[in-house]
Image 1 (spheres, helix red, strand yellow):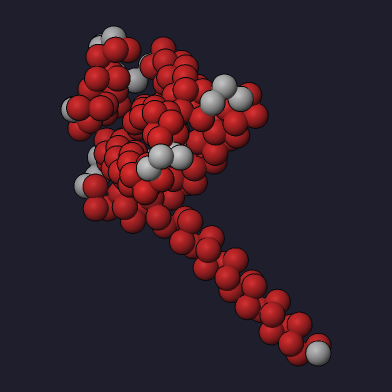
Image 2: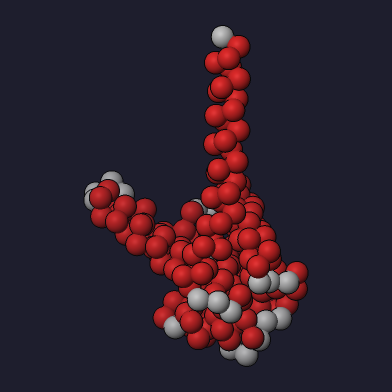
Length: 172
C-alpha cells in the first residue's frame, strides 16, 4: 500500500504500475483519497466555485458510469464499480496543470490551447490505462469500451432526430 503522495507521483510518472497497484490493493481509504484529490484538482484548476465543483463531480460520476456500463456488459462485475471510480478519479490528476495555463490566456491564447489539449490527451491516456487495469484488457480494447456507449447513444439520438425531422417534413 503506497502513500497518497506516492500514488500521485506514480499516476503522473509511472501510470501502468501505479494503476495496477491501486487496482490490486483497492480499499475504501483509496476511494476517499481519490475523492479528496479530485475535489482539490477541480478547485485549483477551475477556481474555487462550489457550483463548478459539484458539476465536475456529477460529470465524473456520469462518465464513469457510462464507461462502467459498457465494460459491465463484457468484462466487469458490479464489485468493480468502486475501483473504476477510484482509478478514474486518480486519472484526472494532470488537470491540475490547467490552472497555470489560465494565467497566460490573454498573452498567448494559442499556446494555452495547445497546452490544454496536451493535458486533455494525457488525461484520456490515463483513463485508458486505468480502465485497462480494472478490466485486465489491452489499451486498444479499452478505446472501444470507452467509446462504445457514447457512440451508441449518439446513434440513437441522431436516428431519433432524423425520424422527427421526417415526421415534421411529412406534416408540412
